Amino acid sequence: MAVNAKKIAVYVLVVFALYVIITDPAKAADYVQIAFEGISDAATAVGDFMTWLANGGE
Image 1 (cartoon, rainbow, N blue to C red):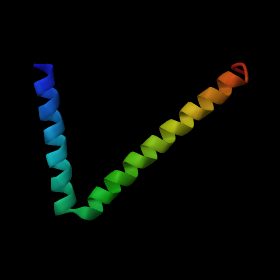
Image 2 (image 1 turned 45 degrees about the horizontal axis):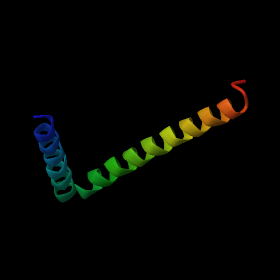
Image 3 (image 1 turned 60 degrees about the horizontal axis):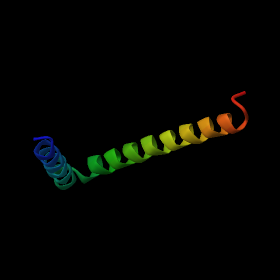
């Protein structure tokens, strides 16, 4: 049951992404930029945390 739900969720996500890209490419580009900024911020936070740990948590 969980596998079917996962397949359906992925299918819906792909269809939504294609719909947004086809109907409004500028908005789709904004969504991609927001996603990459989020990933970049998360990676920066992990790097800062690892640096903090390497310095003994000070």
